[in-house]
Length: 188
Image (tube, rainbow, N blue to C red):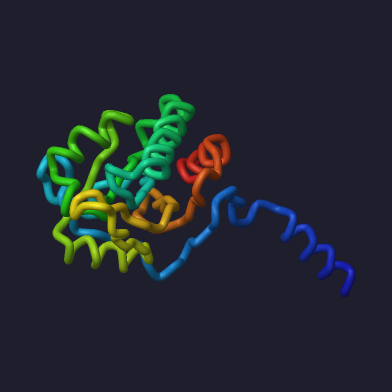
């Protein structure tokens, strides 16, 4: 009897089970549930507006010299490598610099990486609430002038499944192919 139980356990643990991801699996985390912001066309948006798609959410700012454009470029490559399934991936860029990242600035910047990408912004208070909900750090770093500051910020991407649940945290420069594989698993 003991052998049968051990064999059953081994077979069960080798089988399907939960999918293995390349990114950090944060399924069931009690955060990253929603936001209430405005998109670059002026429309109010919440996470529910994107149900049915896999959503990639990245926090950044348009004057970022490296991390933000690199991440958006990689996300455009992910979408392209998904082929026809790329239409089921929605990339959202949430600014942590509402002072400089106006609707007009965001409307030019984010869709330049891919026309389907959406930029989101809010008041400084809305930005703080959203960052807290997603456990995102951001802090202004003083520059030589009042408007030449930079912003230190969390440099990872959240992946939300089709039902609106946070599933993955993608580390900076994880690479395009591992993320393509993860999105395909979520599109299932």
